[in-house]
Length: 324
Image: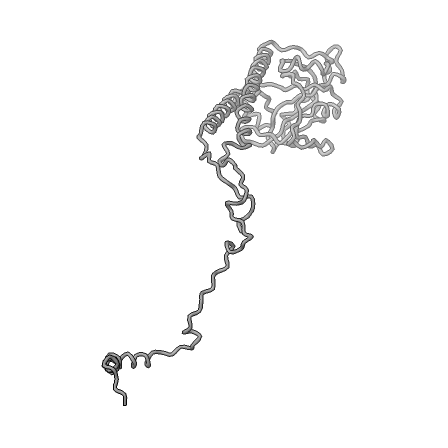
């Protein structure tokens, strides 16, 4: 037998050492995997748009420069119109105030003048020049043609206005053709029936003193009169004159305000006439303040909006098509 080289003998002895034996036992005890898992497989690369030779990057697309943070929109036009419109309305109310003040002064001047006798025939077109003029007329009240306008409130009590034709007879040149309509005043609703207020139906010749008034214009919310049923909601002078054969002349009977006398008349059913005064409303001063205040407030708001610094006025690139 050939003898081993001393180097070979030394290597063989190293495999017989305890460390080599432990390594052999560990390799035998380790789990055994299939050969396919133990073999080294190359990893497959993920497929991304960058791997496509035809892919175009976002930065390679044409860009459009736009300005972000637009300063003002169309709302600024509406905001600018509000103070201008309010100022014009306030100026218009100044003119209305001047007109209404002069109108009231003219009516009050007519009230302080002594009453005029009402002529037999009156031109309806000339009543405008005598509106609120004190007049008086003598005749008999036609209670059989009485008309009630209502409902009307008086000191919180529901009732009606009593309108009775005044047949002007007994004077020279007077006849049935000179009959006029007289608004005698207010009565409570519970005394609507004439049988319950005999003291309020004088049969003798009476003299009525009151204010000559222009015909009223019906507003949109007032219902139409129904003469067939005796229902009247507003004083339609021409309609009432045609029903009674009177002139389209309206006289509002006046009385001296007296609380005790008014209570007595209300209990007896005697119509309570109106006070001899101008009852036109004049609220134009409030309207002037309202419109001018609104104009000033919206002007300040407009100034604040225009003065306010805009948002960051930066430029940014917007992609011309969607991300891939």
